[in-house]
Image (cartoon, rainbow, N blue to C red; front, top):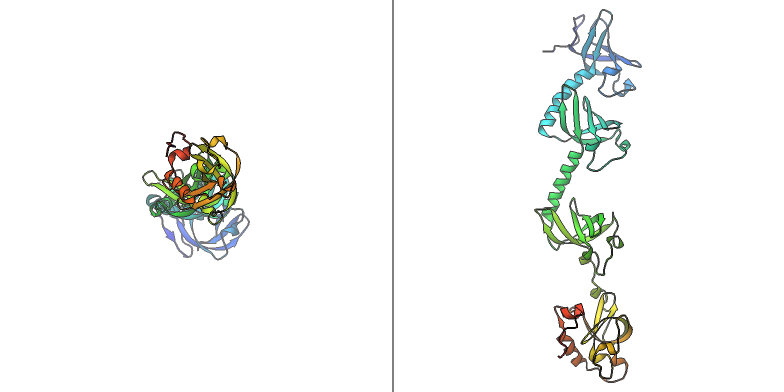
Amino acid sequence: MVEEMKDMPDFEINRGQIVTGTVVKIEDKQALIDIGYKTEAILPISEVSSMHLDDLNESLQVNDEIRVKVKKVTDEEVVVSKKDVDAEAAWDRIVEKFESGEVFEVMVKDKVKGGLVVDIGIRGFIPASLVESHFVEDFSSYLNKPITVKVVEIDREKNRVILSHKAVVEAEMSAKKSETLESLEVGQVIEGTVQRLTDFGAFVDIGGVDGLVHISEMAHSRVEKPSDVVTEGDRVKVKVLGLDLDNEKVKLSIKETQPGPWETIEGQIQPGDVIEGTVKRLVTFGAFVEVAPQVEGLLHISQIANRHIATPSEVLSEGQEVKVKVLDVHLDDKKISLSMRALESSEPTRQDDDQTLLDEYSDQGGFSVSELTGDDSSDDSK
């Protein structure tokens, strides 16, 4: 067992002993330590710390009381090491932290080609691949700053300690991800940050979880590519459409958080208004006319002209700009009834009859599937 000596006059000392002394003088490359011996001990700058020092004043001050290990004893001098004593105590702490998986804070002292060097009583090393969960090109910003780490590898014989900040970051991200997933509910509206764009949509970080906004859920209008709507780094409001907790997948929608095209026209289109629109589709019983972005009204065949026509194509063609009169508006059902005939004469438009015709061809809160797809196979004998 190593013997530790206190302040006793003229005691014998041997190589390997640990003694307590007081710093009495700091020189350029060494410090003089009073250990109660007949001569003051020399503490070289290389034996002060496991880290490189350019100036002893960085680590020592006169009157500091320190523990040192005797490295050399001759009649002329005694050479001691503070570094060896600190290392022995540090190793006990490091082994304990390694076995417990403890997260602790260290100060970055140097950057080298392969990573970061820290002082933990001995020289600790954080390889470049274990600094962050992402690639870091320049480590200058880490110098002389604290960083949280875990011990991931130790080799006492080689005096090697490998640390990881990446392991700490990933553990925190995993915990945050689990917490977020547990808090999510279908239908919930939250804010997130656009992380990356793909051909099929955008991934949005909603608190450690990257949810997918499919391109079909980015806007009410057709989207050619996600970058037309969002860019990386944008803060967006999203609605949770689906959850797969087992696979940690979340389906999101930007579109569902925004007013739909029918909501935007509320109060802007009223019965009796004369407006312009574009013929979008011709069907056997009439035409669908876009009167606002993504909003189509039905121009029934009976309301296209004063004369009898067999098919809407006798008067209209897709893409044609037309002026129409609004007969009726039902925003809740997404229905607008239109007439061109009403603008050609003062003849009554028989709105009640027209509404009956409209209802016959409407379904599921809007127009029938055949109308919406433009399928002319619909039965127009009604």
